[in-house]
Image (cartoon, rainbow, N blue to C red; front, top):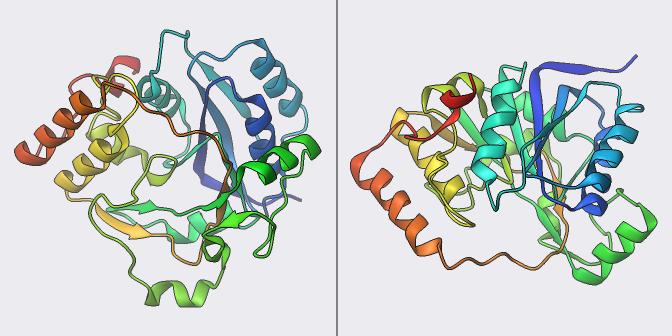
Length: 265
């Protein structure tokens, strides 16, 4: 009989990256504890992604939900908001579709759940050559000594030592690609701000509003390991405009998104 964390909805963002998404889904099948559901927050991917999700829905032991929005440019905040509003779990673990999970990932996040806190996770980084090899071989298995890993110590899992390590604070490395929070906190700050155009800072601004609401940060040190698959970093000439939105939230202690999740209730 499988074990399920009934509080947790796992939300995975994706856009036309079926090879990466398949490794992520394979890593979910290896979990010691499953989430209540898996929701794919899809920013407009094509038919290949839909077919992949349909195929894995047949073998996933929990509901696999495809939350799709039309492809109208980079709308990461919208895709996340639409998906998370649908979530049945009271606790959201949000990852990007290039994050391959270690087998204790959901189990560890369940142990980290605490009222009035959000969790910022880390990730090891897989180099380009090994990313291609793992995709070709459909190999979602990693360990501390896997070839091509950078920041491999992130994969160390030592639960009893977790509480001795404080880790980073503020916005440093608090990224939406590995972030967990209570759905009620998400709704109270109105989710991700959709006024962000293109890549950059939407996750930092979300985290800042959690801080402004009084939600504290916990770091998933020595727990909830994951591997980030290599891809070229996105750049966008609108990043400076997005930085202005982040600065406004910092300076004015904004707590709620102006264009946010309440559109989808």
